[in-house]
Length: 78
Image 1 (cartoon, rainbow, N blue to C red):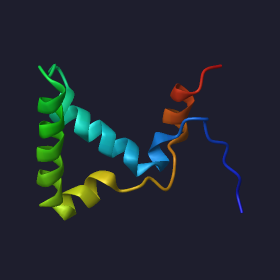
Image 2: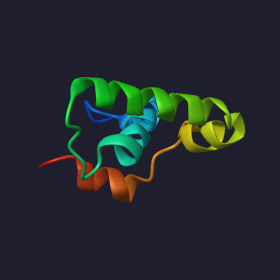
Image 3: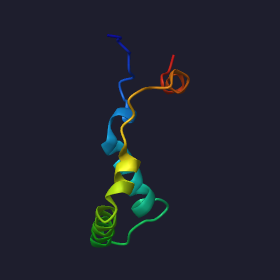
C-alpha cells in the first residue's frame, strides 16, 4: 500500500466536478441569462442532451485513478 498525499481540493477524483465544468461550458460560459427561468430551461436542455449520449458522458466523466506529480506541484502553494 502506498500513501499519496492529495491537496485539500482534488477535482481529478470527483467526476461531478467535470460535470459542473461541462455544464458551465455549454450553458453559462460567456453568457448571462436574462431570467432565472431561461437558465433553468437551458440546464434542462443540457441534461436532456447528455442523457441521449451515455458513452460521451462516460468518456467525459471518467475518473482519474492516478495523479501526475508535476501537475499536482502546480496546484499546491508553497
